[in-house]
Length: 394
Image 1 (cartoon, rainbow, N blue to C red):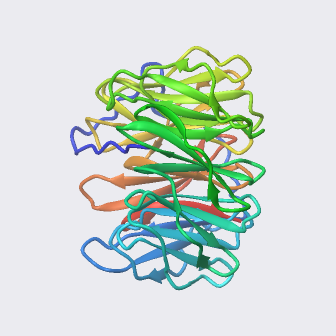
Image 2 (tube, rainbow, N blue to C red; image 1 turned 60 degrees about the horizontal axis):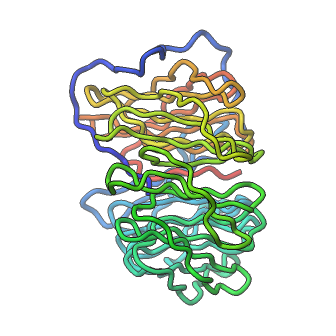
């Protein structure tokens, strides 16, 4: 479960982790690739929203794609082939397909109550939507935009990950109760035997070879269990847990050699990113990314595996930053400032550009900042009204 920590406005300075610079060295102007960024723009107090397409080559918002949903659409996800973007609306319990070629929205597709996560098979044929309120996963045929029968997966499912071969979807659930992971065969849409875990699962990530699913167990919200559980997908058994304090989020490098774990402090402030060698399940030196005056919000690995990007905001100001970590050296680079408090990130398929959504405290507005990953050079922020989700297609 990825928990976003809300921070109120405070002083006008940004405190960064010790040793992290507050500005970048001079860099060449970035080259933005040919892709389209899609941002969900909510309508607080209303009953409609829009998805804003932003061509990466121009950085200028295109014509809004109007959709009738609740005020805060929760998620966006693009099919791997780039043909469709799905908008998940938690309030109405629906998913809206958007044709990227025509920028038109299709009819809402009913799913379960309180949809909270979505994953799409590598062949782009099926989208699986996790509904926390219903305890179900709904498969959607992307060719016909029709929903299949809901798949029961137990109490409070919160996340889903699909193996790279597309054969199995793993659904994480349980939250404060005994955790569990339910495998679903994508060929039959039938659930397998649930794998029981300790209380308080937070996040799941699958190795590129599909042999291991890693689950973060027991952030500071859930007490004693503090570990990362490696699940052997061939047998559905949990290998020896990796002791780890306050695991919050997980990501595996594309080569499968390193699992990165984001850890927060006991009060949600301060944090580190730790590399774990998957061959031995041993943790390396933690990399500090936030001190006791700042919050690590989330992180993601670039598609080429060269960088880990960590979103950090400050508890004493309305500013934040993105901290690149070079995976080859496991070292933090100078922080890239962004306008506001960063909370969402997406990459172009080629990994050349990261797009970071940040909220501007007091102004009631948001920005999307492009960052060239080769140089950590931030482009001109793109202003938006109320951004709630982001994805990239193309």
